[in-house]
Image 1 (spheres, rainbow, N blue to C red):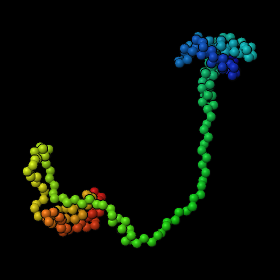
Image 2 (cartoon, rainbow, N blue to C red):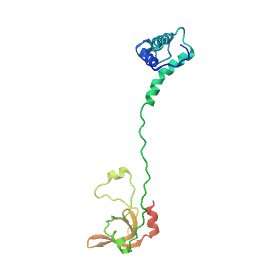
Image 3 (cartoon, one colour):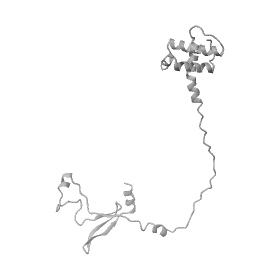
Image 4 (cartoon, rainbow, N blue to C red):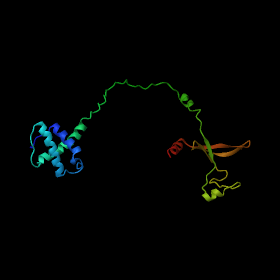
Length: 194
């Protein structure tokens, strides 16, 4: 066999011979001399059908490379034969320009939208830090000391944010708060960022 290219029939015959012949076991690693000779014999019989050209003697380096290329070519051909998916069609569309709608809204109407929003108001008399042991020892009649003194202003919290300070008052057996100081707007905004 000279440096001729293999025909399609020769390639198919080599593949069939490799799949069914002794070279099938050696396809994972390098080919042994017996496997190369078996492939050569299969190729010789295939070429004898095509053009009756005999192949005598050992394989040349070009013949071995041609056999290896023929071995890898069907896999590459199979990958290339997979049809590619069509690319999506992208078209530019024209959109109308959007303009801001300016409707006359007075400030009173804007505030009235918020007037019915419920807010949670909490009055904080003070705070205390205790250990788990002290917490477990609490019972009916226990006194828990707070960090504020009697008569000191208490904090009025709105949704967890301090809004004012005031004094505790009793109105007909109910507690109430007389507001004595309202937190400034800048302090309220600063505490919201924390």
